[in-house]
Each structure stands twice: as C-alpha cells, then as structure tokens.
Length: 280
Ligand SMILES: N[C@@H](CCC[C@H](N)C(=O)O)C(=O)O
Image (cartoon, rainbow, N blue to C red):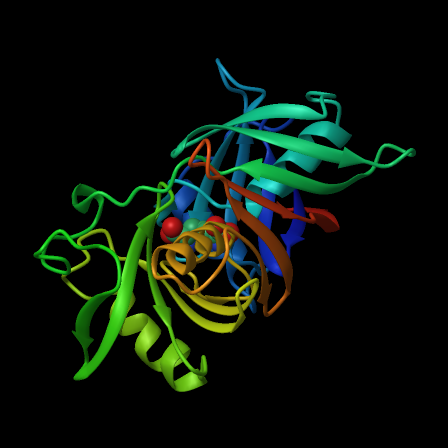
C-alpha cells in the first residue's frame, strides 16, 4: 500500500490516497502501527483521502492511538494539496468532507502547479454547553470558566471546532503544564469524549504562542483546529484581535474570526516529505 508523509506546520501525518488504493482494513490498528515513531513510518496519525459523494474528497483522520477524530485543521491543507497535485480535483477552490461538515478551501498555486498555501474556512466555532461537558461548565459559561485540574486552578475556555478543545492562557507554556498536566486534562472524566488542550502565551493583541497536547497523539508541533479555537478564545476573553498570527512549535498559522459570517479562516502551508510502500 502506497503512502505519503506530509506535514502542516510540523503536524505530521501519513496519508493514504484511497482514490488509488483500496480502503485498508482495521484502520485504528493500522494508524497505531504506521504512526509509531520507532516501529512504523512515524507520525501524529493516519489520514485517508477517500472519494466523497458530495465533495471533492473525504478526509477521514485517525490519531496515533487509533482513535478517530472529526477534523484536523493541518491535515486538511495537506489533503487539498494532494487532491490538487494528483489531479483528483484540479480546482483552486475545493470542498472536503470531514466529520465536522463539508469545508471550503482556497489554494494558492505557483506557476509550476505547486500548492504553496491553503486557506481553510473552518466554519463556525461551537460554544454551546451541549458541546462542552456540563460537569466542566455547570453554569453553561463556556468562556473563561474557573476549573481545577489535579489540584491546580485555571480559567479555561472550551471551544469545539467539530472536535473538542480546552484553551488555557498561561504566562509560560512549560513542559510541566503541557507534558505533565496536558494528559491529565485530556483524560479528565469530566470530558466524556476526552479533549485537546491548548496552552497559550499572549505576546500582544495580534501575536500568540501555542503548545498543544492533543487527544490521542500527545504533544504535537502544531494543531490547526486548536489554533482556530485559540483565535476564538482570545477574542471572547478580550485578549486579542479577530486576526492573529499564532506561532506553534513547527511553524506559523494565520487565523481570522470573521465578524460577518462568524466563520474562522486559517491559512498555512502544506509540505510533502516522502512517499513509500507499507508492506506489513
Ligand atoms: N492536529 C489536528 C487535530 C487532530 C485531531 C485531534 N487530536 C482530535 O482528536 O480531535 C489539527 O491540526 O487540527
């Protein structure tokens, strides 16, 4: 089975083109095996690019632990690049079906037909308490809510971009917080579907620094749905403007929460690393 390794801002996944390959069996187990950084290809997870009945392609994504997520903001840019460059859909505006709905993407293509940057319409953030565990926000206040994890109290903002995020603004996103507390928050029973966790430093009203502990994959070098949630949380808590640049461990993402449509737009690159054949 042929695969391609790609990354978006250092968030690296293994991609299988199911227009050209059959859909593999036992995908959760395959995701675990291929993602393993010592015994497999290595990556934050596995992404299948599948034919869709209503969009140009369907992105199905699995974390490194084999769990399936609704959406991946960095992977979807890579999917768009493969879909365009392999001629599956030679369109500079395309739609990709995801577990968070059908999303529209605008591709910036060079004269020699290389996709250099992609802007994704990430849709509307979901702030309703129905998307957020009521045990975390008993007052239905999802913004800037005081919560204690492991004996430490933080103000958190819970934002769903189709997948769940718990955004915490901190003075410094230390290893102690990201690697120590991140997994405890991810698996806190008050989050019934587990959660992604963002630790965010505000540099000024248009610049932030983010580290993410991802549900099912651990710390990643970037998280696109997470950056979208951070953009929204920054505005809702009065810390930032609606357009921001977010520095992640593996690169920069530009975010804008549009006033008129309520949609979040995210721009970033997509890089092909190598291709290979998986024989196990
Ligand atoms: N890295 C991703 C998010 C991947 C899924 C996430 N771990 C989840 O389980 O929701 C992104 O760029 O958005």
